[in-house]
Image (cartoon, rainbow, N blue to C red):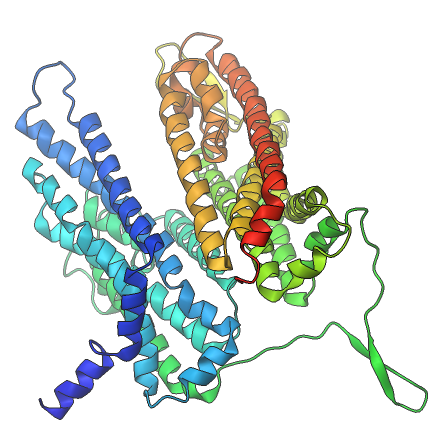
Length: 609
């Protein structure tokens, strides 16, 4: 075998690290469950979309044209869904690379082997990224079935897979770079989700605000926008081929090529930087919150920490206070609060000043509150899912169990402390809606223009630009939903051996429940009178949509009569109250179950952290 071929195979195919990761990962039931769930979700959504779009309006068998349109529409739905799932699952499979930093001995042993720096970096990447790529290849036959209906060219299928693959490669490269730098720990896995959601939302918002009717400079920086340019060339047109040159032609004429080139290029640069620094020790950061206590002669007699006021429940105080233990944590939390509050005020001011119109205002408002709510939900799940498992791993739980603190006090304290920490962040989307609601109630500060016509009704009627009561009802549902997410996270954190397993489990449960309820609320809200708006309030995402676009989210109720908008608002408020009651009921039920099985679960997992 030629030396160059042997070197290449040892670097990629026969890389010892990649072989070990693939062999061990293939034996884990969790990976098998993830792959099965991934395909199951795609299959169910594809069947649902085909049945919905292929049903002829006048009865009888659908025509070939209707089948082709159904195939194209279904392919578009699952193509977007595939990128969403890849963005969710790629950090999960790459979590092990980041988690290596939590145990420096892993790196010490690895660096004593004769493996080269390139083998260490590429082995970690390939061994974990292979599972993500396997998901893409496993779904290829499913995508191919849409061609039987027509309307779906093979080039679009492969291009959509290329977009998703480049997104997975970029996420994997970032994970490897973070692992090599050694400045983050296991909890940084969820930072992936927050960064991904924020980045996609910001670039999408900038794209919509650019003023161009089609492809913009931001399209090539966002996988969803690149996919939109690929699948919807009529509603999202590109620049005419040959009309531009240089980098402008790349971004505005070929956005898919731009996204793939940029993501792949950034990934390669990160891998190269990681290979150069992996044996240099990475970047290290340590913080100290204590000061030395010395005598008058300068002799150190111990360490001292300034006394603090503790709440009646010390666990609740610890959870709320420990999150603000470093300047960076304080800065990150309050930067989110201040930036979100100022953003809401600026948005209302832009509407009042005429810088943006009502339609643009509503679209931007919905995008902002959706993004903020998603980020808060992810943070809540992350903190709760690591609250107990982290203490089990570092031995803190063993010390707590020697105190008079009971399981009821412990779990109640965790719940109260985490929700208390998140309340200022929850005030951001709620406050934004309050600003908009007050503006509507005041008649645009006397200027008017705070209503929009209902375009789906034969009799003219107006609905508010934003429901004035939206801030109140969204606040009630968001707090209850956040408590629900925290409780589910604590449940998985208690029963899981490590933080990675608890985070994955909590995300899966919350995602499935919220997704099912959200889909039901989205469909029934517009198709069912009175009961539909109440069901929409069961999920924060559909409730936010109904608060900003009531004429679309609650169509049948709004256009059902002259009092339709009022009836829809009453049904929405009623549904919000029931939603909060249901979520709080689940919280107390799960907590009671955890209290009963606390001792058994802790003893069962003792020493496994």
